[in-house]
Length: 163
Image 1 (tube, rainbow, N blue to C red):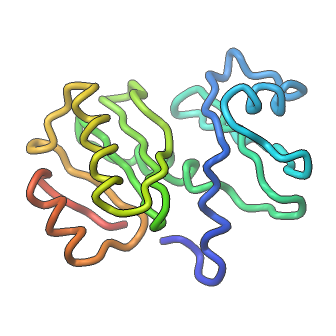
Image 2 (image 1 turned 45 degrees about the horizontal axis):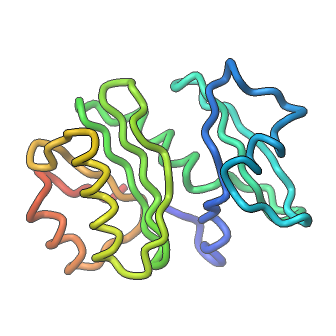
């Protein structure tokens, strides 16, 4: 579960997953700027994700030393034993989503979703793109779901798990 207190600080969307072979620490900021708008005051950090042979680069406010939600979703996806590995979080404004088939990363991204219906739209769009059938898939959420959200997802997924 996310930390208590100011949990919004965990939901950093300014991040990029880069194959380890292409990552150069001295170029981390330049690499992230290619995919995200970063403020001059933002610090750029990175963390290895060995399971996927990748590095997660992310921007954060100076002095904050926590890992972004995307990192936790990547780690969660490592532990899922199914063929289709779907890990997600929803903070009320943005859907964070990791989609993996076996060990092949299909998607690691976040989507602006001001309501849960929009979040579901992005979720199902991603699954359709990768020809993944939700009826034979489990989805794992790190963030709490309301009963309505859970029931809505149960219409499509084999299982909806909250971790």
